Length: 326
Ligand SMILES: NC(=O)C1=CN([C@@H]2O[C@H](COP(=O)(O)OP(=O)(O)OC[C@H]3O[C@@H](n4cnc5c(N)ncnc54)[C@H](OP(=O)(O)O)[C@@H]3O)[C@@H](O)[C@H]2O)C=CC1
Ligand SMILES: CC(C)(CO)C(=O)C(=O)O
Image (cartoon, rainbow, N blue to C red; front, side, top):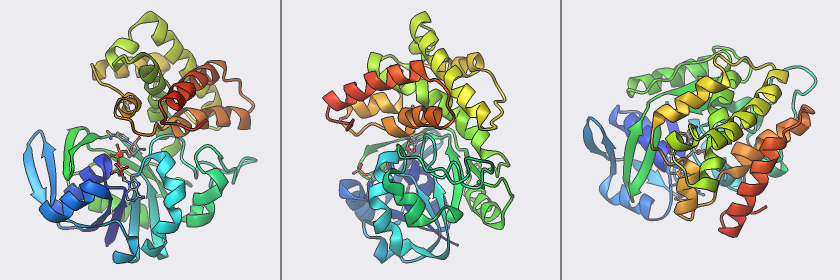
């Protein structure tokens, strides 16, 4: 089974190192000094259990790697649409694309059934680049739970978690989902195949939608913003608006907003990825995490006043920092 990880930074590097250590036929697409370091010295993974360095096949040119059974996309959400043409050499007749990207996935309305079937989302797939470029039938959904960081070129630090939930848009336990699950499990990762991947997407999104922009606006860590009465209320209102949208789309939440906020507080003094991006001058994932939920509000005719307000503020914050185009 040939697996290519496109965008092998923190998450893709973690997954790639684990697969390579397990002897899987895995290749990585990366760029810049990180790629150079991986090619020259291997990929170093720092985990609680210790450090390992593994030799990897890595390139910035998909044509070097050829058609794959699976392409696991671990780019930041806004980086995907412009690189779809560059991924073409990786895609053969039976290639599965696994979307390991936070936020509302571009394929959300594929095989959902009902009147919204096939709806495209401009915030996450401008110009239908992925829908038309990959074709939604290739897609296997994925919710990424681990936290990791590239701490130096060629060096990935794993922080916590090892679960990558997988799920077909139609909920089936397909052969391709089960085979990838087996390969990831053999690499020491948890990769359950879920019948209702959209339910899981929303529980993760609840946090990213609210905690991430609030942290970017206030510079507060998760423990603080989830317990301060003012920001907790803002997060709660955003989450309730999102819940109303999701429930109209048939999602069932296994927990309530207060438990989800408590879960955020329990993570501790964590700086969310959006705050880290702002601090380090990297483009912010505002469209995928917040703008997309506003768009879903319009699609489902659900009011989103708190989400709209926070989006306006964080969009301007990102724009002034030169990290987001409004
Ligand atoms: N990191 C985390 O802890 C978590 C991340 N996620 C999600 O996972 C996704 C990936 O995040 P993360 O791993 O942190 O992101 P990273 O930025 O660490 O990884 C993406 C990598 O792709 C590279 N890249 C971008 N464009 C190209 C290109 N055209 N060709 C080759 N390489 C390219 C980037 O290089 P460059 O640096 O040069 O741009 C970077 O190394 C995001 O949606 C994120 O929200 C989810 C859970 C936790
Ligand atoms: C906030 C958190 C930990 C979960 O919602 C996260 O995923 C992020 O930092 O992007």
